[in-house]
Amino acid sequence: MAGLTGRMSTVVKAKVSKLLDRAEDPAETLDYSYQKQVEQLQNVKKGIADVVTAKKRLQMQETTLKQSVVKLDTQARQALSSGQEDLARTALERKNVAQTELQGLDTQVAELEEQQQKLTDSEQKLRAKIEAFRTKKEVIKAQYSAAEAQVKISEAATGVGEQMADVGLAMQRAVDKTENMKARADAVSELEAAGTFDDITALGSGEDDIDRQLKSLSSQSAVDDDLAKMRGEIGAGSASGAEAPVSPAGEIAAPSEHAPGEAAQTPPAEGGQS
Amino acid sequence: MIVRISGEDQYRLDDDAAERVNELERTVIALVDSGEEEGFAGAYTALLDYVRAQGERVGDEEIETSDLILPPSDLTFAEAGREFTGEGLIPD
Image (cartoon, rainbow over all chains, first blue to last red; front, side):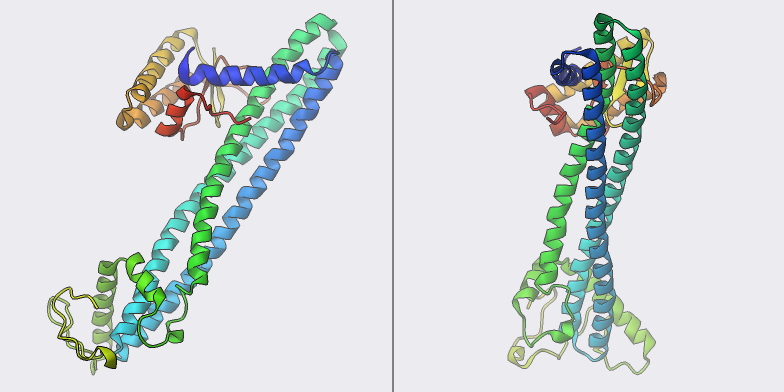
């Protein structure tokens, strides 16, 4: 059969026959094949361990990001309550970025979970086949003439070899996926190191570099929505609200809490950017 | 005939089923050849589903060589394309 499927069978058979060619004596071939199989099984175990390690790293990042989301949300509320809308916006921008990262991580942890499960299943199948090979190997050694044994060995070794190749493929795919996720995890770590999810109380006055980057990273409409919602909640919570009045459309009417340096600005038009 | 779905299991299929498998495979290959990514996932899933539904799973302790090895179910269109140009799915 051509194309997609024929090639894979051919590759497996070529690999196995290369393996079998190394030994001349059937008994030796059998033991050598078995030894190779057991080695491969060890590799699969290592592969699974690598996937688990990658998953744990992502899970730790998830925990950190979740904490940041809660913290930044609280800080945004506090800032808004005390009329510091710019600060609230900064906190929400950070929260927005953290949440976006969090969603990505969720998907990836689930994907790694799936890879881990697949590899574990593959390992069990390979283990069962190797065990069957071990039994068969003793029967072949005891019962067959050298010529017959060669044929039987070739059949059995090809069968197990195919399973090994298949596990090898599953591992390769898992490794590729894990590599992609490492890159992602590194990116999150970089954001963390840059202070993206830091306490906003540590922030100096004015816009720093992080804020400019955050503005590009975060979804401004989501931040606006969050702000409007928070305003509503705070307004409903404290009857004696000292907040800026909120128009029916949820827009804030000419906020006056700009930093002194920006005071000369004309009142913001709708959708105006600072 | 024995068909392996890579990353899953081996299945024992009647020889009559081979014809249908061939047909489903040709559909997939045609899509890959003509660069029609849209129908690819559906066509490939149809092939795998047919094998799973018609075949009898080969036990883990049975040692059988497959007559046919199908790539894994999460095969991407790009990977399917590479299969034809030579890189291959099975790592060295």
